[in-house]
Amino acid sequence: MQPELEIITKEIPAKGKGYMRILRCWPDQVDGLIRQGARSLLQQGATEIYAASLDPAAPLAEGSGDGYRLEFRHDMLRLERPLDRTCPVPEGKLTLEPLSREKVGQWLTLYNECFFDVPNSATYGRNDLERVQEEGSRCGLALLDGVPVGVYELDFQEAEPEIAGIGLCKDFRGKGLGRELLRSVTALLAAEGFERTWLKVSTANIQAYPLYQSDGFVQTRLISHWYQVISEGDLLA
Image 1 (cartoon, rainbow, N blue to C red):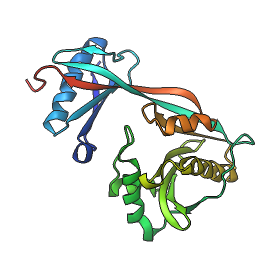
Image 2: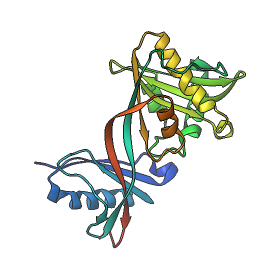
Image 3: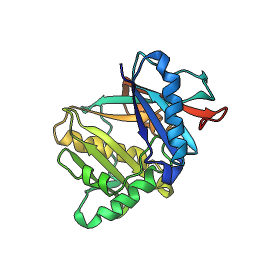
Image 4: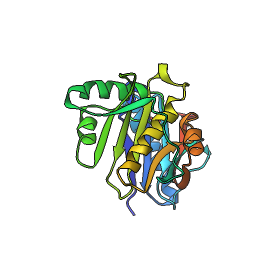
């Protein structure tokens, strides 16, 4: 079997973070793939490297390899909830405004501000903006008294819609608006006739993960374990 390794460099320029995902390999190929991926990411300027294996036959584990060690950092989970009478009702503090052509730049700036410090979050560029405006996706602004304070992104490629992202600007966190934004989005989906929704979250996201759980989202799948790759020698050798 030919091993497959996905290298993700997108977050290196803004955050110094590089990621690798093992898509498939034999267990005895894991060490070599980790070294290969780490070398590639270091050469491209990464100062932090994270790895996950999506191949159940080749799981990662904490410990030392050839010139590096792996330290567990977090899990990525899929959470779901029904959109029924158990859905908490928003208080009406926020207004959801669908994205218009005139506010594309504002949405992009706000998105990157809201998600910059979120574990495993992505920095969006113009290509990503084109993607979320395609059929099957929807995004917009969250307004407080007419002022944009956050963003939302929805994905309709599956039968059950995904809450692909909700985020608030730093100055508006800790005021209960994250919960209000979540409830506003679930209310929107329920009003459109959907019966369930889902989202992905990192267990390291200490604000969002407990929020989702307390509002009725339950884990339905473990997506991936993530480890930091820490050099203990010369990975570039």
